[in-house]
Every structure is written in C-alpha cells, then in structure tokens.
Image 1 (cartoon, rainbow, N blue to C red):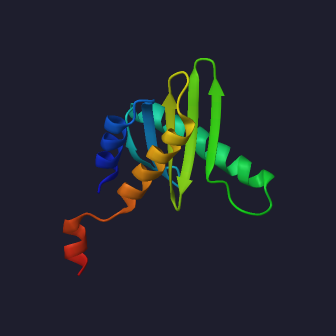
Image 2: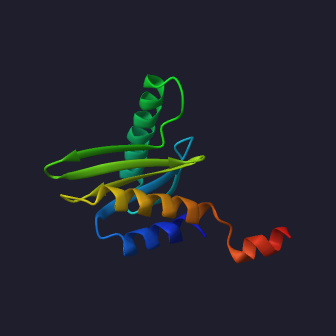
Length: 120
C-alpha cells in the first residue's frame, strides 16, 4: 500500500487524529495531510524528538513518544525505518491513537499486490 493511501485510511478510521505526517529515518516525507513546508518542519521536530529520546536511553531504541496538553496531543511513533507524527484534539484515546499509527506504518510498508507480483 502506498504511504498516501495508508495515511488516507488512517485519517478515515481515527476519530482522534486531526493531522499526520509519515516520514522515513532521513526525514523524507512519505505522506502528509498538511502542506509540504509544514510537514517538513513537523517531521524534523518529530525526528529530533526521537533522536533526543534515544540519546537519553542506553539500551533499547525509542518507539513511541506522547505529549498531551489541555488543548490536544502529539504522538510520534517509529516502526523500522519509518515514523509517523500525529496531532490530536483534546482527550485522545492514547492507546487507540498509537494502534492506528502503528497500523498505518505497517500498511505503508506492506507491498501492494501489484508490487508483489512484479517482484515474483
């Protein structure tokens, strides 16, 4: 599935997520529900947050970050070489947001049937 399609499905199924950006380890935008410049800025900040969090830990890498305020939340989730950052409204169901982001990242990493046939 393409990253654009995975993001579209994410926004369709998640009641909590208002905007999201999918990006790779190098900060390249894979898909975004925001404008290009805003998406690049958000991906850069989210990538820096993940890097800083990993620098604080000596063992396992960081897979998820959450920041919640009275006005909404920001969720950053990494799976392999891809990551997603999402903005929510107030009182998001954190576990569900994380689940939806993880499913989105797995969906965009999964080859489409056409790609699978082409490589067979």
